[in-house]
Length: 231
Image (tube, rainbow, N blue to C red; front, top):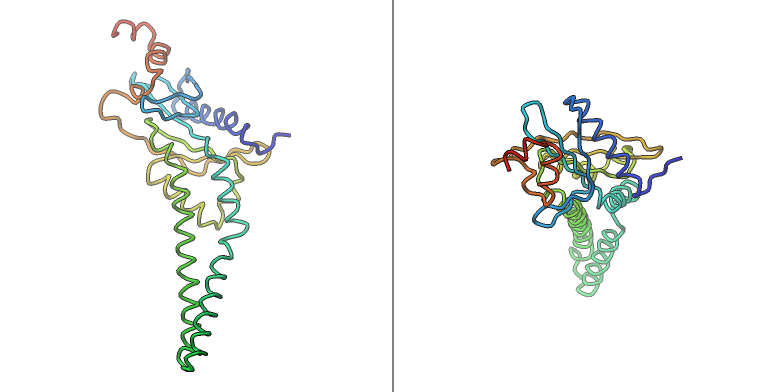
């Protein structure tokens, strides 16, 4: 039985995305490559290219390299929420202000300030920890945002159930949506779920294939004699 290992996600994601474009566009030939490097040094774990109906080259990229890290972060937050550090901070602030109140023999410091300080510390710690986790999510998406393609995909080896009632998962989808990145998950029993479709990007000059080191090889494979005549 297939399991949820990182080594499997690429195979299932590759098949899904290839089928996605075959069904959507009716393209008879879709070239699939792995580890295609851009001229800037970024790597597309999956690379899909075909010639569409208006004879223009269409490029789609897939990123899976941070799948395990993203999966671990989302699953951990789903199961445990935030850390107990914020409770520790609240307790320390309560104890410190209570001690000061006792030493000063001041009723306000003794009865009011410890509660206010503990509550403020708890809220601030919660906000800072959520911000830290959201920043970590965004950092894990850096690579895919540097991949030039008509459409970009993120593949995660994780059950789609982890996305339910999960603030970090919602943030992940929000960031991906903002940048037009499609998201698929590969869960147990190799179940692939489309969480979010990609948005098509516009290439200002030519096509996105020109950003990749293997441009000549892929262009020749897609255009054949037409490419040779132009070249």
